[in-house]
Image (cartoon, rainbow, N blue to C red; front, top):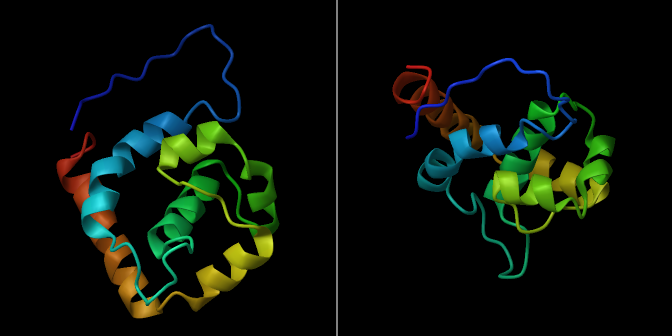
Length: 123
């Protein structure tokens, strides 16, 4: 993975300025560690990985409420940064996130966290 140098500057940062950096840090690891779906899904359904990446994206933006997902629906910068093809509606996002199997989700996120911080740019 590339090493990044973060410097202070005089430029103004907008609310989505860190999305690409967060997405770059997650990109390879998330694709390799998180399975596309933890449970069987329709072929046209939003994948479980996308639900998790959307949640990670919300947290990277300081958003902790399911209702905040509507701020990013149709936001191409958010979707491109986190590798999400489609952002679910608040109702679908809440249901799908709650339906994720906790044991498999926690194992996947723990592996992702371990890999990011042991071999990533911070390790």
